[in-house]
Image (cartoon, rainbow, N blue to C red; front, top):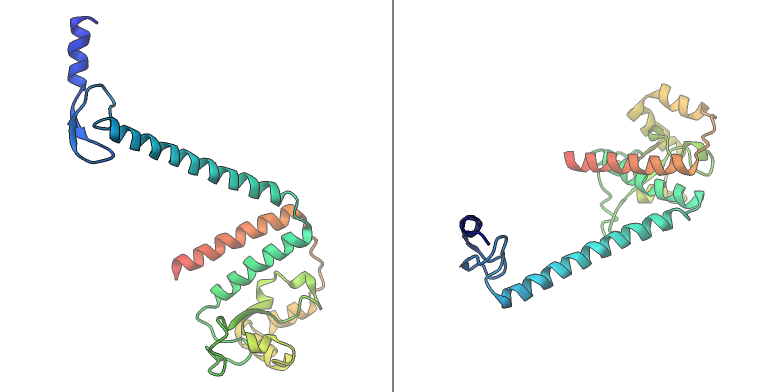
Length: 202
């Protein structure tokens, strides 16, 4: 090694904190991050564990992506419905029940979650309206069960919320919606983003 190179190397060495024990030490070589053999071993284990965790995360992502490729259209529809319903409940978080106008049900405080995303025109009667936002509103669970509420009460709440013209437009809407798996995949991502945005504002 030439004298000039040796001098340049010494100027690169400095005192720094050990990344493991945090004690100060004088570097013996450039880029040295630990003070001695014990901390070097600990540092190597940390790096190995971090690499293993990164590999495990990548494996989980790859497995999830592979499984999604085998999902049926019905499974994708159910996935979208879950995210869509969560979006509706968050959108209406400060609104009362669409049917009775209550902000909570005093007689049903132990259910662990009082709210559903209630469809005015049910999915069974009009599957094409299942993801129509004007058709779905926050509703007390008790009203969303068989015999829980009447269509008259739901309709009155709808008219008060979105107006008679919008309600009649829903009732007259017979336009079919034919969603592909790619459509459903996109819808799930879009409603997940909307849900995150609403929660961020809240």
